[in-house]
Amino acid sequence: QVQLVESGGGLVETGGSLRLSCAASGRTFSSSVMGWFRQAPGKEREFVAAIGWGGSSTFYADSVWGRFTISIDNAKNTVLLQMNSLKREDTAVYYCAGRAGRAILVRAESYDYWGQGTQVTVSS
Image 1 (cartoon, rainbow, N blue to C red):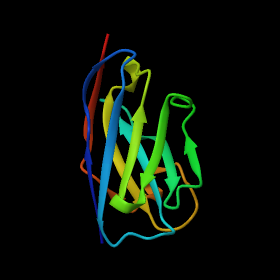
Image 2: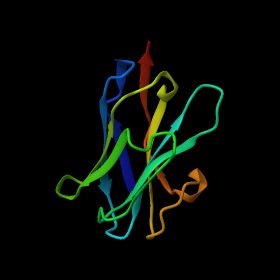
Image 3: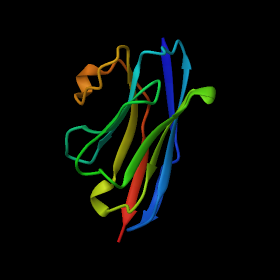
Image 4: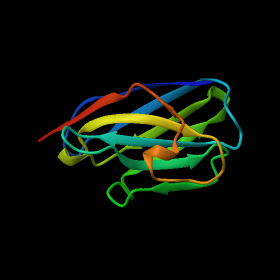
């Protein structure tokens, strides 16, 4: 079993930055994939970014490309999401997710483990 706990959300002005962290505990796999998703009120959960646990492969949604960076601190079993140039449309609850296997997938249904979410609000 894998436990995921997000932190780092908050309120930020348009153009600002936030860094989200996801601490993984329990049984983590060197061949797993970690991802970030988000869900705004009234909308479906959508893919944001994902990374192979080794850190060599990353993939981003078009909407965050060039603004967000996903990374892994293997020593701390932590997945980070650096968010820069934030826009109002980035406002959502952000979820950390994990799946066993090497394929980076973008569907939420493909992920086995989820954190509780952390709120990110971008104000104008």
